[in-house]
Length: 162
Image (tube, rainbow, N blue to C red; front, side, top):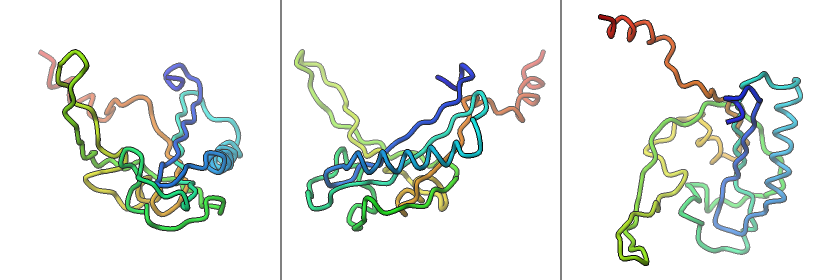
């Protein structure tokens, strides 16, 4: 929404793992990434930057992955305080594998609750944000708020003109 209004925006997400999440460690990594993004000067109006921080957890706590979001690196030990590379990369564009649970509301109506993992994709493109996140890179992806396929506009205008 900020980007639509011409205000530069930075979104940060922390990958959730199987252990107790160490939000302080994740926040420190996020701060380092934000500082790196802003080191070259202020962002342009409408800029939208997405930052993903790999899981930072106390692995001794064990437990199940919240909402199935642990990903293929869940069993890989890591030091949540160790420096991680900050890598600019494209977003993964493979579709999510959707899963839903049928539930019944207190009023007796059936509904479907999303039960899939947030990072459970049909595929993961090498070098994409998801691929690098699982390899413990902090990912930085510049996004655009305008999804118009500008190159195709002329074709569509011609096709639809009468």
